[in-house]
Image 1 (spheres, rainbow, N blue to C red):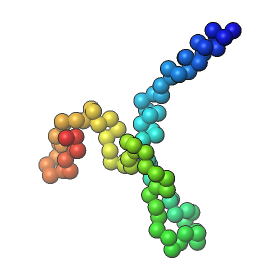
Image 2: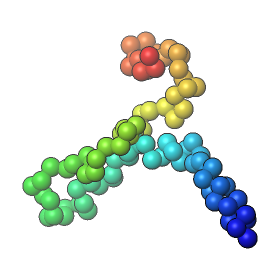
Image 3: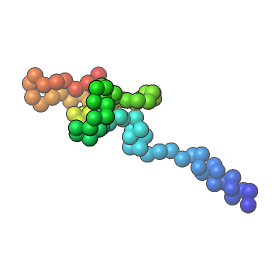
Image 4: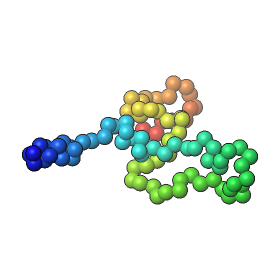
Length: 89
């Protein structure tokens, strides 16, 4: 019975998250209504804070204007003149 439990413990230690789950923990998405419901008096005079906990290594904010998979777009120029250049350098 001890051998079976040892094998299960080793199997648990070798577990890794999927790439998309790891990425989900690194991206911070903005709240839809960070100051509360529309017209709420709570915190009316206080500025909205972006993040209340400490930043972890690799965390960054996420925007709707980012490419989902930046590796697919690396090195490709924009199709329209005078558009914002991609930050793939």
